[in-house]
Image (cartoon, rainbow, N blue to C red; front, side, top):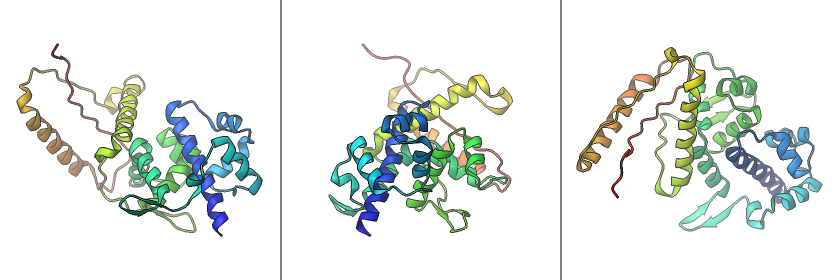
Length: 249
């Protein structure tokens, strides 16, 4: 039983390594990953999705290829401040750093949602493997529940991407991804289906906290109007940025 948990930890580590490489290079594919690991691409895809268990010989190969430490394979470890499930710590980091986790939760709330990885992948413009990994991760974090017959239940409630200070790296990655998507939509999304606007003003920096408060109030009012609509049919992201255009020498 204990070794079975280690086999499962290897599979989860495979997922984590793949998503990190995908973050650095969006064109990085399962075939590329399989080539780097010297593993058959079809078999690797099944292991990532959890439809094929990691075998004992494959366990040794993956451990060596990914240079996993004994701690990486421990299902449960002690951390400062008490016991934690260290997989969940990595899951939380990924939740904050990859936009499609929030996108998937919101897609669940649209009226025409289909419980089909290929459909979800198409709607979010990500791979089916990323969908499978995200669903599994969201379930581990108890943000969704997946029944034995595959029915997904949304447990997330209203979400905020506000990140604690120790998640600042992941939070910056998330914001970068969302801004890059907004730039991409400038060229490929009709203007009637998007809105891009900006204002450049001279401010008294002493008023900066008040300006941030106004932005926060607007976001909350926007969310109240947009969320919990039973006729929701699309997922959007609102990114509001207030940043300096000038600097003191």
